[in-house]
Image 1 (cartoon, rainbow, N blue to C red):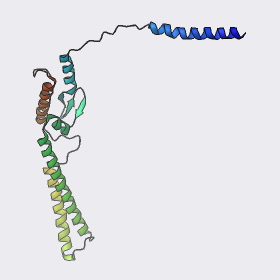
Image 2 (spheres, rainbow, N blue to C red; image 1 turned 90 degrees about the vertical axis):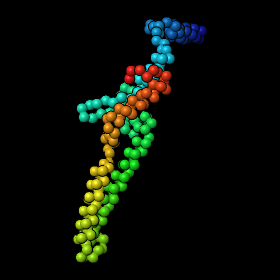
Image 3 (cartoon, helix red, strand yellow; image 1 turned 180 degrees about the vertical axis):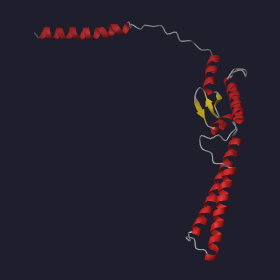
Image 4 (tube, one colour; image 1 turned 30 degrees about the horizontal axis):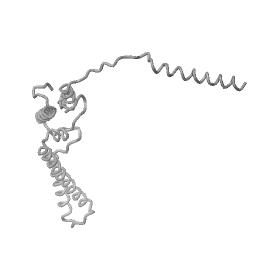
Length: 186
């Protein structure tokens, strides 16, 4: 009985192991791979298509895009195009605008605190100092916003012509780095 049981177990193990081994040698989807082998020039063109920049215009708004659909901010565009001086000028302009606007707000708050009699000033000067500080603060903050408007992340500080020039510079440099001729279409 023991030999019969051992024989049945051995035959069952061999049959269950035999089917996966046979199937592994011949798959029903035994297809030949026919991948196209790209030349170095074709590889360079594919890399360029992935790295190139373009400007997409949608009504009144425009967006700089890298490759197929990766949006690029104005700061990234200037860095990629190697226009660091223009980016530095914009950062300086933003800093000045922020400082002027915050200074105006602080002057206005001083005027409000003076009018509320939280900052002790003589009663005969309180109204004059309070209203003049409040007016000067409003004018200063408005001037800061008019001369140096604070940009939201979705706003552009570049004109569309500047963006087009920056994309042309970047695309030309990318073509040269990849060894593509300048007449390669974008």
